[in-house]
Length: 339
Ligand SMILES: Cc1cc2nc3c(=O)[nH]c(=O)nc-3n(C[C@H](O)[C@H](O)[C@H](O)COP(=O)(O)OP(=O)(O)OC[C@H]3O[C@@H](n4cnc5c(N)ncnc54)[C@H](O)[C@@H]3O)c2cc1C
Image (tube, rainbow, N blue to C red; front, side, top):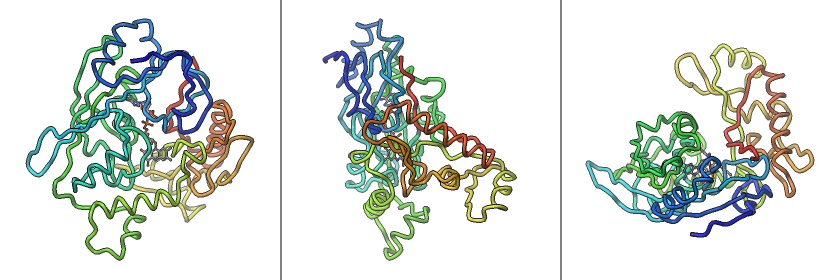
């Protein structure tokens, strides 16, 4: 395995930011990864693990080691009580994995069709879309600890999955390299059409398959989200804020079009995109940065944008939302400080 120096990361982050990593390595096996961590102890203090970089904003150059796991195999580890257990390498493209499962009729990840990124990142922020979260079907996560190169396994319930959250964003933040994820998929799936957009798309189909759900979701996503190959973006930039019902009621009195979603006892989730749109940012551009014209939650990085410009832009949007609605919004994107 090559340890590259001064690697340009423009093709390794979907915002397309032109930044460099001090070192870069793509271990293809757990053995290669552990060897690297044992041989190069000087790198350990400063390691960033990345898949496709579709949820990362580099504030500037990263002087440490960027690790890009490339375990690419998929295997079936068990069949039990109507479920199949599928183990996929961290470097497998997420949507290729979804297609692989759906084509075999195995259900559980079809609503996560079309999300950019790699399998290894799916537990980190517990990726979610259209009424499903990866944590619902993650059976086990295999990892290597960065500090001592030991191997560990965490059961799904030990990963503390929450809304765009997990142990990998908290206690184990930047402490592990996820190498494999095992998913528990249904052999007799019941398609989940709970999301209004999906139900509408499949309105003429009384008995859709999970393949139909996947196709519907791919079409919906294509129609409303910008393709990072055409314009730099990292999907939803901010998380949807969860606020007390009383706060949402106050806003609804002024803006009856707001549709909050239930989020546990006495709390509701407010679409951050709605808040940003009401502050007038939808479709706006300032210099090399902007906000998508169809989805205000997606910040755009035009050619030549820097991490600093994007961070300033995000800060401006956050301040505006705070001033107008007295609500704090926080990034979903991982911001990597330059080192
Ligand atoms: C157009 C677009 C649409 C999107 N839509 C959605 C959506 O619908 N739902 C959703 O949840 N997300 C969405 N995202 C965000 C993104 O696709 C997910 O967060 C995805 O899981 C990131 O995968 P990645 O491989 O690019 O991870 P990266 O961006 O490379 O990394 C993300 C985080 O995971 C860590 N990480 C990555 N790989 C590993 C590993 N092997 N071991 C340990 N840590 C690791 C990184 O250090 C970082 O903290 C979207 C992004 C884009 C650009």
